[in-house]
Image (cartoon, rainbow, N blue to C red; front, side, top):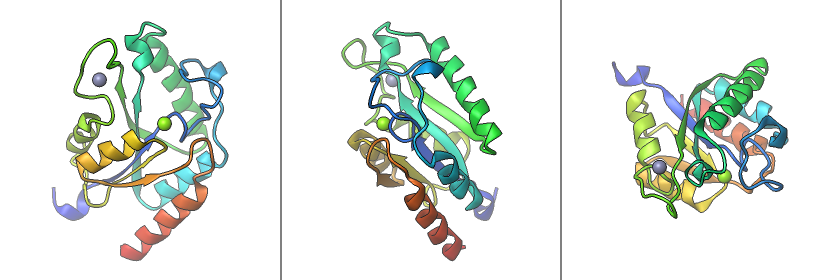
Length: 173
Ligand SMILES: [Mg+2]
Ligand SMILES: [Zn+2]
């Protein structure tokens, strides 16, 4: 595969970026889910700028026995359907179901294994890929993986940021 054919990833954290997590710390049911403002438009702006969209999320509540991985998959199926109805396809969702208080693992953010895996699975262009997260550990993971990252405030519109990223990308192409 030559370099120009390689995909560029826009990797988004889930809770706090896609959806509002101010009322629930652990979110594992559609009833607990509230989309953040403008998120569909924001993701479409990234899509239109040529990014393949993916998510990465720590779900330590699985390790704690608060909910199951099946709950997470069911929520994600529901979420993906809503996104598809809005014209947005997710390439992949990487999940760490572990919690450091219960078990150790190599994939929990701020570690970068989920990102490394995503990049190698799709042979993505690391230099062009980006990450958007609302927590320091998202940014640490991105730094570790060697990709550009943007720290955003939780539960707010990322539309402005995404249009800026899209604009910059168009000028680079
Ligand atoms: Mg978050
Ligand atoms: Zn893990």
